[in-house]
Image (cartoon, rainbow, N blue to C red; front, top):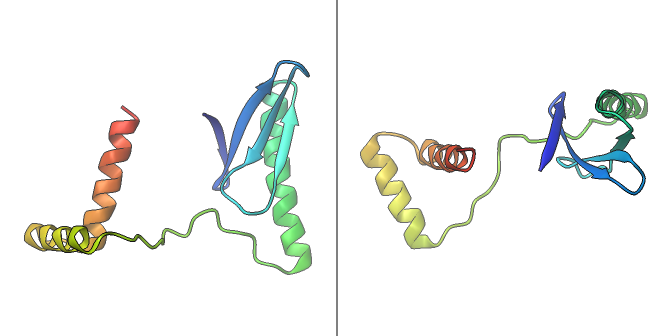
Length: 113
């Protein structure tokens, strides 16, 4: 997946060889934000303009822009997995939250090789 980031927003990019154009969509908001360009420079500029336009639109309408990620999410585990994780975290002297965060970070490190 090809992505770019600006002000915490992540744009996923594809190349349309039929139209000879790069197209992109912000993937970490519910709001649909798209952009396109015929070169990397134009694509980057249009991505940033799209984000800035979205933020300006929110400001003018007096609404809070979506935060791409708050850092909070609920995880549902099987009760046995929950218990084992809690016990392991306790034996390591860390919170369950820290244990889960480390597990996710470790898995992401493996994926990013």
